[in-house]
Image (cartoon, rainbow, N blue to C red; front, side, top):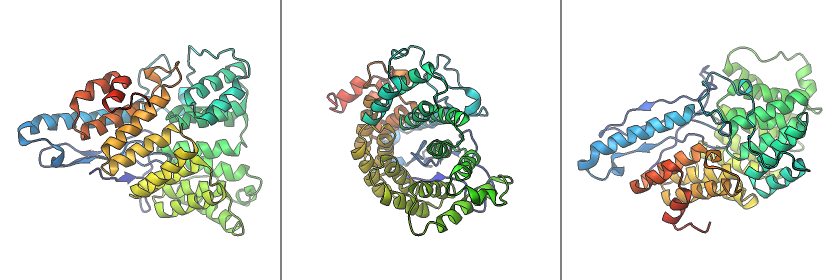
Length: 407
């Protein structure tokens, strides 16, 4: 089985989750399990941990080659952790992990067919609602190129990039939106979530504090003598969490779903997944049709080793938004954790097919981590003859192999 052990900044430790992903784990040997350690995420499990025992090996005769294979697989995941997520740029060289998203700049698609498209912003919003995320990104980028000062276009682009498995682009888009309109509350909350997914705890806390300070209902709490964030990452986290809890106590007669979302993020950062589940569930009591909240609930349940419940939450998110790539990916990860490898492959292939549905979407624009997760799932099914198809991105061959040609 695949064990789940996701790490966040826990109480009693002042170590910050670094902005660049890191891995630790034992080397594979015939006597030892392979165990990779991943970074916990709010929207999805970006790098899920594998625990593959000798029962996955075919026989002692091929043990050495299998050992080499899993060593190579671990190296692949380590490379994925360092990979530049902005795959739409012409320069594909990896960016050093010490460079923050804000310093990289946003890379626009250079061959955007919608470059001079009339009503690009409106159509981009429509495509995003329909779940055609790649077309939505292209249209929203076109709208921004036509009017770079359109803060709302930057906001919607950032949220769409997050749904489409491109966290770095989401962060940069949302940051640009907030440069143009610092009091954009939905953008601040979305940015906090994206920072959390990227392991950037300090930045996530700062975004949530700014959400309070710009919220007309709550900003007086910040103005009444509270100092800006300072000190250790743990102290900063505790300070912002205390602030949100104080605000929640002022709203006992009604549920503010946005406030509860912020609490859910903070409890995730604190590794208090049960309280995070309560917060997201409270938000869903007010917004039961919010597919983003269902996905966040699912990821939190998964982080708390409640994969079966996570599957139910992801399924609900996909019922509400069938084109939600991130939730489809999450569902595949939970299937792996439950040992349902074929179902995991089906979800990964569906996600990749959805990403390329727009004719203008190239293989490079498909999410690299979905491909890597697909490779892991196929390896667990003992289908090495399909590895080459994964390596070259032959989605059609893979879909035929799993009787999904008409998906």
